[in-house]
Image: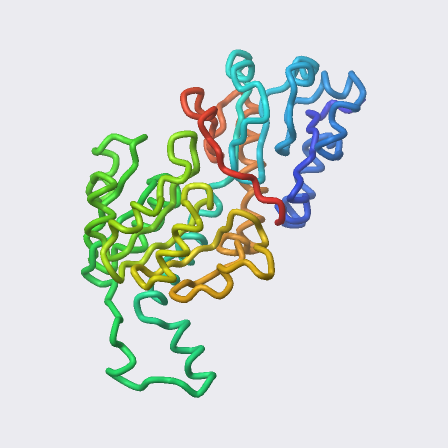
Length: 341
């Protein structure tokens, strides 16, 4: 029997080659005894393997019985990126089992994509390119009839976790007036980052650009409905970067189709949308195929976070790089896991 700590590995929709560099994967295999399996086959592992497992890397459904069988478990590390209601969290907290996600790796690339989308919406970059390729370009001042500057504008950010804060840092150079709505944070946390804590209605009514970076929870599903879109400034930009469940997607699409607002989204209720989905032909929208965070170098950072936190836990210390599930909020999470990498 190996003296190395045992790790059950079932990281679908990721795989080890995706989340580790070759050197980091070699280190992972050297430091730990790996039992590689699939999410649906963990229950069938030998009893002694389950009992010896110190860590579980993946996001499988975990029953009370399976968790009880893993008597030595110290942490479950989700490398998909969402807390989901798929395990007995209360028991994990009682036993001191850390439930972790490595989603912080996506903050920087998604924030950059969101900034690019906002610039494209306000300066009509994508539309101008398409017009030019059709021979329908409009030159100079005449081609900027509805263009706006991001510099010095009013910007709203809904949700101020890793992604929202990263976006706020990127916006600093634009000298924008940034207002933030996040009911899970005290105002001081927001003001410490140079933004202003503001009610959602005020953000919608006054912002030239609204970035949605909040996780979907039991409290905010379809938070942005037809009424919310109608309350936005005419010509404002709405940039959806988190999950589709936070908006009434049809209402968002209709608000764009009417010309009331401009929309950019990297996420959809069903991915991919059907070939005849009206979103594919809706004007005043920029569409991206859930690719904002999907860069190879970004996925590889997951492995670095994993190795660092496992080393800390091996030494009897708490993890510091991955985000930990909180007993007060984890059951309220409703983000839909990705089905593709």
